[in-house]
Image (cartoon, rainbow, N blue to C red; front, side, top):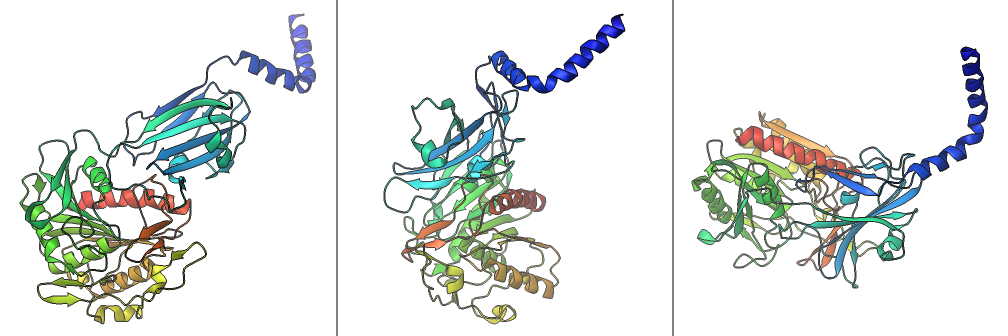
Length: 457
């Protein structure tokens, strides 16, 4: 009798279930009494680390919209948005759930950060981020009801749609990192020393066509164990005023000597050089001309003097002639197309070429964004590979990233699609497209850290 009753109950449930779906959903909602909450893990992290953002206690099976903003000046914010649908149990996990709209789509745990776009409150080109400071950026996030676009999310402050609001600090400086301004022997830079007594493997980091000292990469490298000198070379204090001014490479030799002689810097394996754009060209020149270089990371740079001349101990290395093309519809200059370049096999015959490939004891990591519109990086990578192969160099790697532009930052930084260059008086097109550029940054940063660790530690 018991078995028969059980069969009856079972049949009844099977027959009634299709008719009860709406009722079941209503029961789930009525039982869902938890307050909305958010979990960020790990809670303590650096800006180049991936984090997990998840929500609990949300309305089940409903559309929600995430908005993130970062204030970089009184007139400029960076912002992003994403539309999601919560689970039946009222949860949302950015590492598992798919964005269905906004500034990015798909399962992208860090999409809110790398898809940020600048918004200027005044009629001028927005400030690039990150700028020069290593202060901890505070990202402001808000979760709203419904599927809302970024224009409306920017305005939504007190209309009742906000479910949750919270901040995420993303430090650039790791615990115990020491920041030391360097102004000795004519140098202008900032030295970042890792925590601990050391000595630590040493790196000199140099940026491209942006004046002054941009410290954030040096701070992050120090947070990963490298004593890093971020070196300025124009547009700052007593340094040459303009990008197009002739650079004396003996200045960079002073920086190399400074690091070699510092008691907190390990020098057994030489000093690593890391440069992007013109900073990468300088790194290749230093490797060609100076002793004490341990390895070189060259990112989206020329192996020949490009913008402005260089000189070293009486010899001049002339740059390429620049013939500016027409500006695009957004008023940007494509500098890569403005250079009068020879055939790749003829470049190393020019007087501005640096014979880096002859330095067989120096390992090279050459990184090229194949959609770089500022430097012809694909051309330069081809020249570098031809030269290294011909010289039978024993230790080099060339990495090419499709869909990737000029400014390769550490992971999860906002995408830089243009940069105003004062010497040209216009914004330069940086190239690249999302999400390919962001994914390349993550892989390239990992490669840089592993390369420097392998060659210097």
